[in-house]
Image (tube, rainbow, N blue to C red; front, side, top):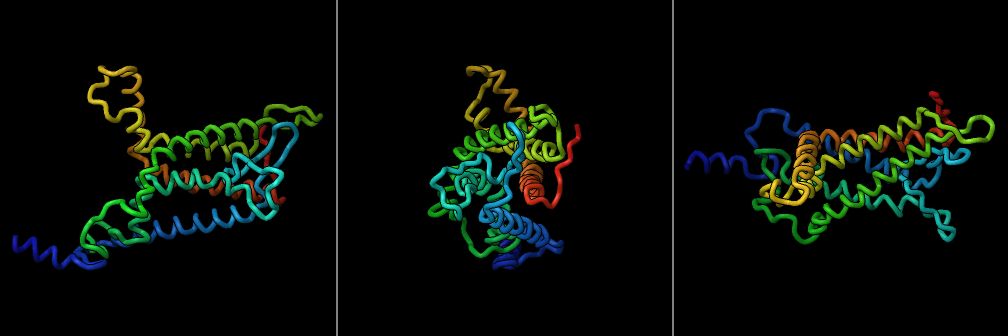
Length: 261
């Protein structure tokens, strides 16, 4: 007991630890990665231009930051349509169980890493201002809706001009970028802890409930995806930013979207 008390005393205080590895590298990389994305996403949301590449018929490339495009006639020219939709996918990520751990450690040092001293000596839980984290399951429902909308954007991007003014099916590089974005967002969403609980939580016996076998298969599937939830969180974050950047470059005329077939 005396030895354990001595070790605990040595580890108390912000950053105090007996670890000899580069424990700070993870939180630092997380802080930089999230910080860069937040700065970029905020800039693009306020930029309010070059977010759609319009084409004949349904053919278009629409930035995921602006989808669905809500632009009523009364909207002032200086107000970005992104403000109507970014709160939903943003809320889903902010309240995500993985991202909570990530930014708690990276920005609030709570704790900085395992077995590393933190700024407080007791856990208060997600109370007071942090009570909004309990809305994660409801942001999940919105995320599923947005996933369907983004998938429809991919379909719209496949309807191109055949050269005679008639719509025809085709694939461009932009189509693949939007499709990759939806795929990674889907993996991130379907690996969500809340979705796993939704399909299989509070069930002691799958064979004893309605649709038990189907729910069991869904639970097994979401559990398998959940093992890589952190990976999907980062890949999808990067991809949604890249998809917006690609649309920005094409819409601004800096690059040309290449038709594959």
